[in-house]
Image (cartoon, rainbow, N blue to C red):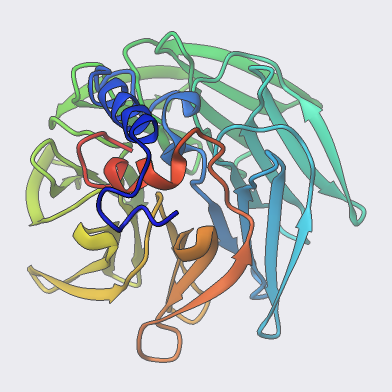
Length: 366
C-alpha cells in the first residue's frame, strides 16, 4: 500500500492516524517531550565521546529496548548489544583506561548503570524515578543528573565506595545539561515556565538562579575557562546563547530555523553549535571574531543529535537518520560527509514512521 498515492489508504487507517495526530497536538507542551514514553524522539537520543587514544564511542537505545554500543578503531566501526530494557536515550563517558560508563532510564522506572570493568560489562540498578534521559560526567567522581516525572532534579554521585543521591529541587521539565569546573558543579535545564534554570554547587552548598529565556528544548552547556555558556532553542525556533564571564549573564540571538535541542562545545577558542534545522538538515554554527557563521552540514536527521570535537579538532555528530539507522556526520576530512552506521536506533511507537515527520516540524518540542 503506497501512502503517498493520494486516497489509496483505507479510511479507517486515515482516521487512526488523524486521531493520533490530534492526541499529540492537544497534549500540553510541558508534558510532551520530557517523559520518553510520551515522545518517541526522546527515545533515540544517542550519547557519544572520543577517548584519549582516539577511539570513538556511541551509545543508543535500540528497537529491542536494548542499549547498543558502537565504537571505531583504526577507521573501522564495530557494534555490540549490551542488553537491558530501556526507554530513554543513554548518557555515557569514559574515565580513562577504557573504563566506560553508561546510564539510561529503565522501563521499571529506575536509573540503570552499565560499567565496563576488566573487559566485561556489569549492570546495576541505581533506583529512583527518572522522567527522561539523564546526563552525566565522570570527573570529579561519577555524577548523574535526571529530572523525575514529578519535575524534580535528582543527582546521583559515587563516593566512598558507594552511590548516593539527593533531591535538588523542583520545576525542571527537561533533560538537564551538566558539567564540573574543578569541584564546582553546574546543571542547566528547562523550567515549567520555559525559562532556563541554573543550579551550581560550591563549598558543599547548592544554589539556583533563573536565567529567563523561554526555551522549548533541553539546553546544551559547557565551560570555557572561567566563562559559562548555554545554548537553547527558543519558542520562535531561534537559537540563543547565554554566557557569563564573571560580570553577570548576558545573551544574544545566534540564528533562526532551529528544530530540536542543540549540541555545543568549544574547540580551542572557537565555539561550535550543531542543531537540526528545517527540512531535517544538519546546521553548524561557529563564531569567528565577534560574528557567528553558519553552514549546511548534511541532511536526513530524524531525531535528536549529539556531537563532540575529535582529538584532531574535527566535529562529529550522531543522530537517527534515513532507514531508521544510526548516522555519523563529520568534517574530519576537511569537508562534511555522512556515513550510515547501520540499523539499531528505534522508535517503538504506534504509527511512528508516519508521526515522526510531524513531530520533527517543531510543533511538538522533541
